Length: 471
Image (tube, rainbow, N blue to C red; front, side, top):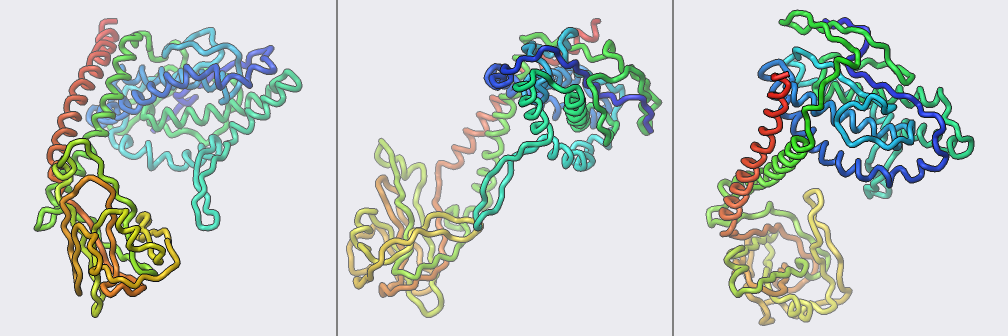
């Protein structure tokens, strides 16, 4: 149970007088240095939030050093938003610091919770916050897709905050004034957003209120937090009780950000390594080939062909050492004979000429997509031309195995008698003898990056924690 006079995420701001009529036009440019730094800080925020998740799950406490850093990132973000297009409430350039700047007109503080629920940490940031995510979608807008004539068309919608700030910008331009009531509404919407941000960032167990608390300032007070299994905890909501971020020096912040970037880079190497390793161990057939799922290929014309397959290598034999042999399996309907062959692309183009055929352009949702080429007919059966590097013809399933070589190549599937209307089931694959080495390289790279990341993360975190303990 929780009783409180104010929410533990405090958002205050003061509307500057004498705002420029024109400066807001250029603030997107002026704020670029902040946007670049915040992009890296938010990478670190994501990593430290994951670390905090496990800290809360196992100990019931949000590690204080992580808490101070993450509050600082939210504070920095709020100052930049207040200066730029989250509010346009000041023309004073935001400071480059995680700490609170008392004389800056925008402030954000979050009361440090002595205890947090281990159970809520599993669900509050996604399941419990869903109603607020819907509201924030209205406030902030976002990107999405619309279906138009069967095609997905990307689009962007501005949220309520953006619309109101745009109105404020127009009023500033023509009147030189930012109406106080409009400012109070914009601050109330931003306060709602930041309260939810603090909640989903695991910084409080108290559910954000569905309340639009307008105005630039909140009243100080106290809050009593009671978590099942723990004794009540009273925290002050005065700014003086805010987390101290001064222990996060520039060097520590840079180290934390670098460690976070390397940690995510390590994960980016680890995930494909695991996927490829599983495929290498479990998805090979009895002949050692990694094959694609069988797909239905169909053409009303005389053939189905692949796009031009370009194999490049500066050294002879390298392509084959990397890819090994390639294989194409084609299964004809009962009672039909099918031809499958691989030849140089130029030779295939001369053979098919203007004959009507389908070029496989891709697979979308499990269905083959084609480009239709040619309008003429074809009289010469494929077995009558001597262009094929490898070929197979007959009923049932036909397979061709091709030692991969450099050059431009095309796979051709036809009826054996060169009649139109081709319909088969086909799959393709390769031996990929280099795959185990690729997996090993990715794992080694992920391990090295992870080791460096741990050092870069542990050093600043332990330093910030040690300084707080010493004080």
